[in-house]
Image (tube, protein in one colour):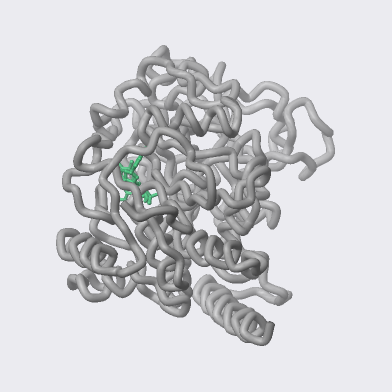
Length: 453
Ligand SMILES: Cc1cc2nc3c(=O)[nH]c(=O)nc-3n(C[C@H](O)[C@H](O)[C@H](O)COP(=O)(O)OP(=O)(O)OC[C@H]3O[C@@H](n4cnc5c(N)ncnc54)[C@H](O)[C@@H]3O)c2cc1C
């Protein structure tokens, strides 16, 4: 075993592998702990590092898509996993899909032969003393989770996602939907929530569609979700059931739950509607809204079909679909800095899904930043906070500044970026190109500034 490594990385998944590589490339002696194959997560199938647990697609490769912007940033910053993905690439149109076996094997080989990296196949149960990156993922082992609870406090470690879908604000039809807060001002167009009103007939058709829609089959390690287990501070699954489960309880059940219309007068009729779906602002820029209480286990295709039946959301652009699955993540808005350092112990970094970033690319990207920053920290340099106009900077900003009450994992999307400073109407593709150009330019000038230091 390496005596006195400079840095310990816990978890040889997407984030941990990238983090270990980045730190080792900067001369640090890194010990990378991976518990597989001795201890299984229930989702991984192999003992390879950087195993892709589900889809083999790393998302869009188009330079003007959110995921494409992140990929270009990773290329520019010298990501090992991007390089391996591009070697293991498969034909998949505009997406970057990979041969999962070749991809993980390449990552494993590159890390195994690196002179500064030692891979240790052991479960870590305590957080080590000294510089450490925790990248143990959404399925962090039970014993390590308990140690993280001791560090963060029980209320700051979540074990399940109950994610409600998110739509982009400019795709909501405000000719049908209306602004109002429950029992709030009677003034038309005033209120924090956007409300999508249903007539009784519309409601009946919607509930019927909800009940008959296809659901995602729960995996064995997710079975607890149906038991009403504790899911974070003040959250029990019994208290945030999927909408389709509430709908099963009776025809009107939803009108007493997430679709309750009381106190939300529709200015067009002067009355409360029969039922409604409320949308709550999801980001500071006001460009994203989530469907309040609409956590769900329907397949994405069925969510697209059924939720487009909501009056006012017929043409809505879904930025994220709802989900319920096991997912260990810390309350980053309370515990992390945008450099991915733990607030009260700055030699400790978090990376990957455990930070509250979602999706393969985001997890690789936070691994990259944590590895770079751990090296800078150990060299006595200031860890980097990337510009918020880059996709990676925006994600790190989002997870560390989001509203703690509703904090749920977030993947790369345009809604986390600051709005463009342009006051004229633009179509979606022009807007996306401008976001991409701005992200690239700000990363370039940031790197120039850094090299001048
Ligand atoms: C079932 C499932 C399916 C998913 N599907 C997708 C998808 O299709 N597309 C997508 O973009 N995202 C998906 N995600 C979300 C996420 O992108 C992936 O989970 C991703 O692999 C997370 O990267 P990570 O590096 O944070 O964690 P992981 O890649 O899971 O890596 C964490 C590693 O830490 C190890 N570990 C855990 N505890 C310990 C310990 N105590 N000691 C040592 N090692 C430990 C684990 O064995 C694992 O190898 C999915 C998540 C889950 C749970």
